[in-house]
Image (cartoon, rainbow, N blue to C red; front, side, top):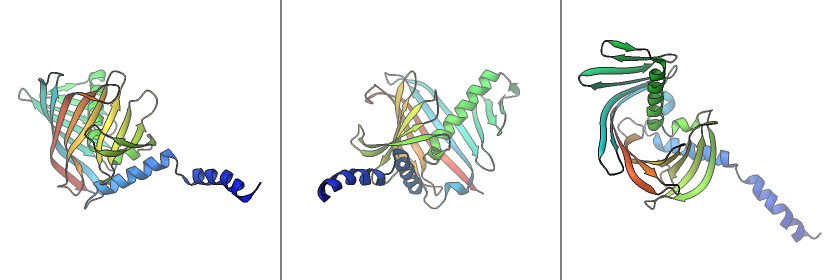
Length: 242
């Protein structure tokens, strides 16, 4: 076997061995995004975050089904706690997870139904997940895979990362801007629907780049938008450092 023939066999193996795995590429991309979302503060130094979230839910005809306004508080250290409070019909509602137990107070009444409390804890966790990106994508319970470049429906070029959260969990794809490394959107696949959640704008008032406006669209199997399902407006951020 001559030198050129030998080289033709060896080169592909050398190139393959030097190429990072899809998981490693995804981790590197998320780490770059974390740096892009940290301005004058670091997420690792944050002890708690509080903010207001206004929500509009729309049907496929554009009719508003509901509107709500919640205050959300998350304690990150020394352990995770979440609290969601709002007023409805002049009655204060408070759903609180203290790190080990869920509770719900409606005015003077304490709600103890386990199914109801579980649903409210899921709401708190979903609210945390929606605003704490990209930091929460590096959770040890996630499985990451880089899936190459993608052109979004609005023409923006993005890097795509698939994020799995375990067996029987929903799957998401996160799309990162190729220039700024900021999260442009994430695509959600559940058992009964598919959605694209766009980060329309960000808030930089706290020294961190946090969501300001998010829009959630129902999509078809190809990822094409069908209709606007929800709008989220985040405001009044308060970040406390440890």
